[in-house]
Image (cartoon, rainbow, N blue to C red; front, side):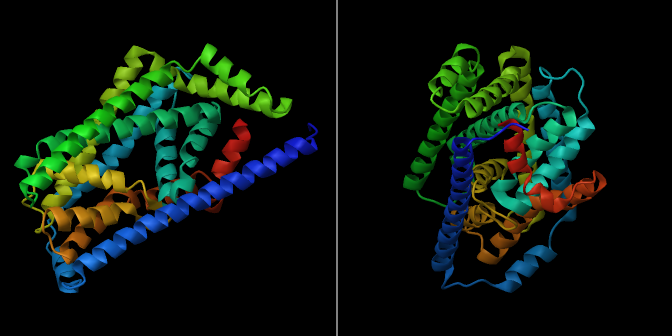
Length: 368
């Protein structure tokens, strides 16, 4: 076992301390954002109040044919994510198991629901262990996936907002102009995201060497581990440097979000209060709610439900009780439905569920 000097030990302790501070800060920011949204909804609707009768009536009158279709779309989207990850693994491994990727995907997303953003490293860690590749390379794949998802959300959101005149949103001309402008800003942001994705394709060779050289002041052991991490990260970006793989990733990402948009549309059709909303309305709601889902409170979600309630009540004039039923259903369909599947698969794989929360830390140690 290699000897760890006092300087390296202090760096490790400081690194762990900083990581805990960042995690706590992220949870605090998420909680504050969620609290702010709750207060907004409370003060906006304090005079009308929450009517349980409306909530229960909305749930009782659900069209289960549409709801079943929405459920199938969500399950299909998880399969699509596994297929997309398989493309990112091709430069690293000639033959991969789609079943193993599907298992890791289900367990990983279940961990995100239960642990919040702290569960994000679970999926790349499990894939790395199952497929025999480095964790760092799968962190790179995760970065590519996040950028592709953000790109697709912004594109869909931008297109939908430019068609706001064909939606059922209740607003004046001034608000319509603002929302249209937001659509164009979303489109511009998508272009920037695409540019960053292209820039990451160039993360190799000299770029990595220059970054490693800039960190030459670090202790030799830590510097060597960082260099190893960057080399593995470079390997993980290999899929973006093949034009055929890149186009496949963009195609599958587009299909992924078309399926998710279909899930939202089917969910809206399932509830009487939102059955009249068009596909354009579903796309607009998807954009706002996807951005709201960035705020993820462990076990509770938070941002997604609150964003859905605000959009449905403020833009479409739907009552608070009915909007809450739709928002909770969207959250359950989009996230919670995968939790029992993930639990069963984790049990089948012999993974202790409590240990999943610490897989991210284990992965960091594995890569650095």
